[in-house]
Length: 96
Image 1 (cartoon, one colour):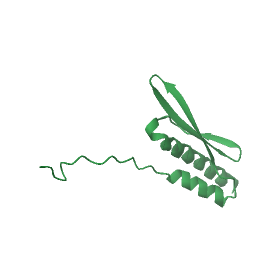
Image 2: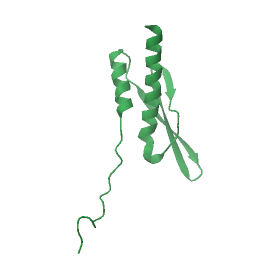
Image 3: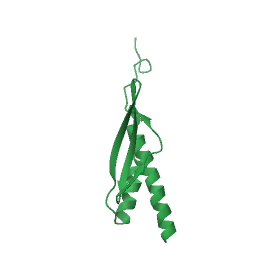
Image 4: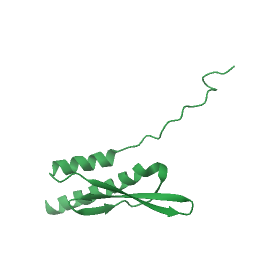
């Protein structure tokens, strides 16, 4: 007899955070900048493909720091957004 404890766990997609992407978008909106434009990059590495991302803001392209496995492409976008936000905040504090 099978119980709920014995039943296989349902397949769940990993929860994908978009905190940095949303924060960057809100920052651009508040600063009256054009919305960020994302670009995904891939690199064949043996039998696997690594993924990274760039984000373009006001003509400046900012790259993610790392490359990610295909199941974690959103992390590449989050990484690029975090880097871009740090650069924007740094330029704001330097100019203000």
